[in-house]
Length: 122
Image 1: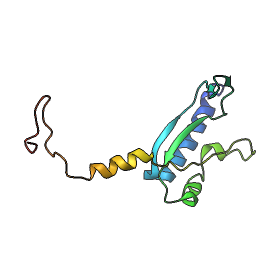
Image 2 (image 1 turned 90 degrees about the vertical axis):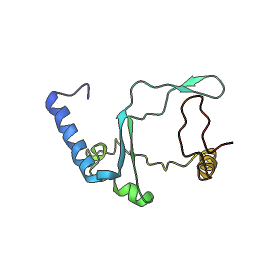
Image 3 (image 1 turned 30 degrees about the horizontal axis):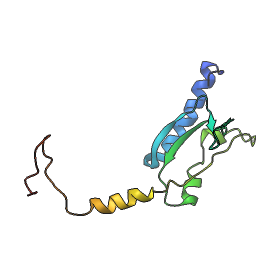
């Protein structure tokens, strides 16, 4: 948007508004555009990073639902084939699943102050 006129920028933001309204409460995080990037390789070298322009996080019941939520997305409005949206399912980290199961065990329900011992622990 840095190279746009004020009117062009307002038109783009209006498209974002239409999409955000359409997606509604499924929009978990509108995200942010990305700036300069770098890629660090596991052998210690560097290379050009993947060309990404930003991210948004939506909640969807499945991949088909996620795809349907791209309808009217501003990046897909040109119809030139130059822009695309890549959809990835966010998977839980395995140790977080274990932690979530652990948190379901009986725990101390009172939040003690610093240095205090919870009253239900002996």
